Image 1 (cartoon, rainbow, N blue to C red):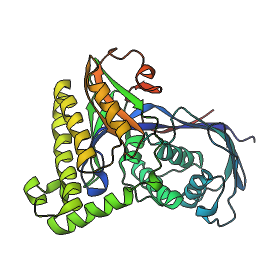
Image 2: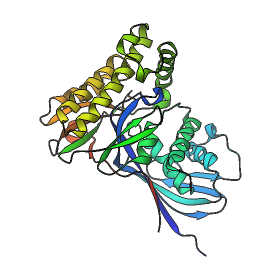
Image 3: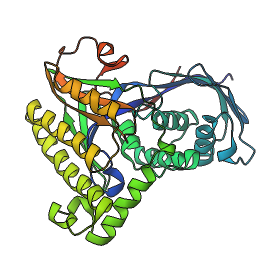
Image 4: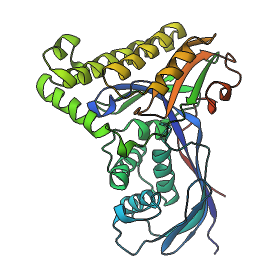
Length: 342
């Protein structure tokens, strides 16, 4: 019998507010978006063969061989190998990848690829297990000790909703997104390379602060004042950011975009000054958005060091995002990753 063809799809995500809080056990307010990664293929025994126009080179992976993930070329093949190492599929597949997600933009293109790959390899565990598998794959592929923000957003997305994620227990509460608002994402033009950034250093500072004053999401600004230097600033960001997420969730439920926008702009200032992950290009783009009629607030989104900014605006206030940055999108909260047999 001929193997049926299949497609899998994993969306990207944008984080409305709450960055660099996930690995500290804090809070975030992201949503899955209608840009994503699609893999179409047919199963075959023994190996995975993948090609894509979005990235250089093709990947051929022998499933019967133990691979050194860090040495695989092309580099995007490391994600394939890392996921295969986790899933241990009983059969391979031959397929192609199409993506509407920009790489290096802070919209979770690598996490979307990992989750799509796991579904293509017929992963059959729970949604939480899928998210955790993708997190482990990211570490194996590029050595980044990421939190679960990207993975949970992509797996648990719901159309028309943002979600409040509490990383203390990975609980998720979906929050209806007002229909009269737009989420606008603009690319700064600076490609973000997370493995080459100071991400691990920032995480280590947060862990040091937590060792001294306890879990940061439960700490107060007064508690952070007992710390020194960069450790104090990093902790202050996490403490204040978690509170901004709490307030933003309330404001979103009450359809109060003015408050959400103000909190987003405060978040950017905190990421710029206390967490020091912004850049002059990101700052300029946020400033430009904040003086645009109909925009309530803007901030960098993702880990920083380049990538994208996100803005909250009235529906239709920005008719052409490309005119503001050269590359932009109006995105909508969408459903999470899924698999379909053709």
